[in-house]
Amino acid sequence: MTSTGEVLNSPVMLPCGRIAPNRFVKASMYEALADWWGGLPNHDHEGMYELWGKGGWGIILTGNAQVANDHLTLGRDIVVPEDFSEESCEPYERLAEAIHGPGKATEPHEKPLALLQVSHATRQSPQLVGGRIFAPPVCVSDVPLAPPDHWFGRLFFRLLFKHPTSPSDAELDKILDRFVFAARLAHKCKFDGVQLHGAHGYLLACTVSPKTNKRTPPYGPASLYILKQLVQRIRKAMPSDFVVAIKLNAADYVQGGLTEETALEHIKDIAGWAQEGYPVDLIEISGGTYENPRFLTSTRQALFSAFSRKALSSIRDIPNAPKIILTGSIRSVKIMMETITSGHADFVALARPSVPYPYLPWLIIDPASYPDKTVSIDTETGLPKLADEPSPWWNFKIPLFGAGVSTAWWVAFMARQSASQQKRRRPLLGKEISQLEKTLDPFWISFELFIGRRNAVKIKWITYAGFLLFLIFALRRL
Ligand SMILES: Cc1cc2nc3c(=O)[nH]c(=O)nc-3n(C[C@H](O)[C@H](O)[C@H](O)COP(=O)(O)O)c2cc1C
Image (cartoon, rainbow, N blue to C red; front, side):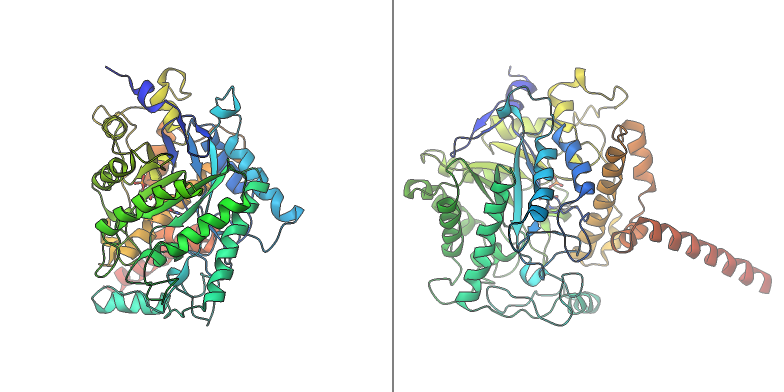
């Protein structure tokens, strides 16, 4: 019988020739650690990524770096600068160094591959926090987000998301130029490659979805045309060993959106680009958009595994085909093993579990040398017990609202981990993590995301004190 280490700790060579030292991918997570209205990576990012850099991951993806500073997601996004300068490159270089880290590596190829995820938030960029006050966002076609089907959902969406405008072909080309620039920046600043964010309803995902790309040829209607142009331009601008990855949806899971059948055809087509001289190294499978954020709200284990298995088997015989990464609710070592041994994917990616346990691969591959001897492993999953997420009543029947609160909860956790690393303490481990999980209250965490931790704590105590005074006053009147 093959051991966990043999399967999950085995290296993989990518079509570009680079080697990922093992099968673990730290999936992309928006960190909310940059300045408000977008900024460069900073020491808080470095703190978190230093932890991941030492954790034994094969590939580490950054949170989405935005190519347009007026199309952010939740406001504190990493932004790709306008041009190269020492000031703009140095923070990116430090981030790449943090990722490559000292690790447990003895050979350069054993260090994790550092990939910068690049994105454009398009019609999902909210007003104000997204970097615009009155201007509408741009999308591939002027199709607005469909709000949930009740008054509160409609109000929520109306307040946050404006009707997008559709750019001219020349304007769209300029946005693609920004993606190419981001790849050049990543290379100059010592990243091993980029991941183009073509999932979750962001701009590149909109180009392949029939719901959002209604343009006339050649840019539309929905097809791989734009994505292919982009990959070709990046490949032409970069050395051949630069890693080019794409995150794609298995489906949009909304009426009129991308279906699994079409998504599967796309993956076969992309695999064929290698024959034309433009190989894609990795395709990460996810699914959903802000209209139905399945990637965050579903509790089903390995929810896109059936799709990724079909994807992998359909491209297996194509020379230099991309390697497949499966993401989404992978929560047991057994599932990780099955994913690789049964050919569901070449890599397993984890996002949320990597926050409390930045060293998770290390714990799985080599538990004897893991620094925290007190960590207790759940016998069913083979992993440490993971936090219960904020309670579902917060959803207010709007999945995006629940996903937002959950995101806030996780980014607050990342800020705490980063702070502990920067003070050169060891990361939070075992018992301290369970303690921290108890103190992360979804209501206050949502405030924390927007007004910072200190202010949130002040407001929390002022509110509690006010409530107590009100109670005393009310009781005295009885
Ligand atoms: C806090 C948070 C931020 C995220 N930010 C991104 C992002 O920037 N880019 C992206 O592709 N996915 C993002 N995701 C989605 C994850 O990459 C992943 O697809 C999803 O969390 C499911 O994986 P998991 O069950 O292992 O957490 C984010 C998820 C969380 C929890």
